[in-house]
Image 1 (spheres, rainbow, N blue to C red):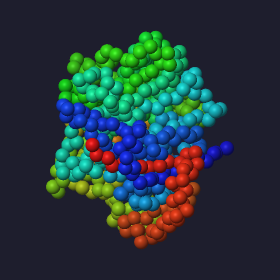
Image 2 (cartoon, helix red, strand yellow):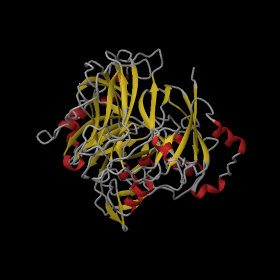
Image 3 (tube, one colour):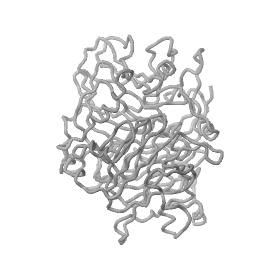
Image 4 (cartoon, helix red, strand yellow):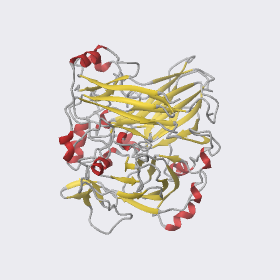
Length: 583
């Protein structure tokens, strides 16, 4: 039986006392040699930063009511969660009109035939830089076995780079053509670093402690929700047994450290098999950076055994050393393969899908370069096109026969022409099986995400992709996922079966590049649509742009306001809080 799952996001007015801020949100990082504290604005959910866990079971119907009490428009998107035939709930501008300030809107979707570790976040206006994110776990049904012994506990760790300037200040920097620069630190579960070094880390910073029992094994789900920094995750003296990534079980391999790129999620099985002479460091440190300049940008939490005899001491566990082995990270990424004998959300083996023997119907080579100036503005591009934000969702425009909203002429390969700003999307073929090659000619590592789908990561290398590169493809047990890193000066190839109708966002997961236009959409329409393939627009669909005249005013009764402020509406009620506090 499919069970409904209901929760609400409700926003309250910002608290004014400083003590409310100090009671569990975020303390910032060093901004000068005097170690002054600068307090950040955060967007919290249910009085929590990061937001609380959404814990559901595959095939649940999920109903989430969002109330936006920010002073700007809001959309929540669900990274990696696949809305089958229902792009109306995807939470990006090409699929949803924004939720205006002081409005409610209800997301309703089914997490159909999907399991794994994901997260949610606000997709507009660079808001993720201030928070609003949280974990989203989809569990197996009880009758579907998991490919490992049931863990003794489930732990979520959210990591990410952090700037003490809020999202409005950061996007002002980007609008002016500036780079964001080095972040102020790395947060672990919304908290700053443990004082592992008295010179680099001042006293008094609140840090995260993960409590465990000796001899037990925990499933640790790690999400990189940051803006643009790839992070290396490691736990002192403990092995990380990789088990799942973004909805698919992996071949179980042990690692002492693991690179987690922007927008990616992984599950590790970690056995508490060390002695308890002391606590242990949990570390998230920046990758592919100048270590001298970035030394202070390190997140450190504590793994605390229940019988621990003392605090963690000594140096942090060593990060990867790439000076003589530049392919360490890419080889690690290639080692992530799919467990073809494990069941996924269904009883049948998830590896039974013979993707390697399916004929490719179309190939898209998507090339990214460093940001360039277009019409006096610094913009990021894919195949020379910097995407212009839509005024109305694409399928809503189709439904109302609007013309000129978008173009179906996105180039399938880089063109020899100056970059331009346009609203061009991919006219993808329903039931096609396409190859997408992501060529990164930018100077930094980039992550790319596709909404509505998982894709097979069949190839990855440095250099330029060519047709001969197909000879190196993994055609049997390539991992399926929704977010993939592409190394600077390198490429990644993915295969996608286009069986999910709608308009689906393909974007850079690096927030700065996405904000500057590095995205497009795949428009996938069944030409024989009879009302069964794609869901209709929801009854509460929002209208904007040229359709704004259809939007009815929303009524807010005083009774409902009392119920919001009087306490939880139910067990799963959220409160969305914008906190403005200056140091």
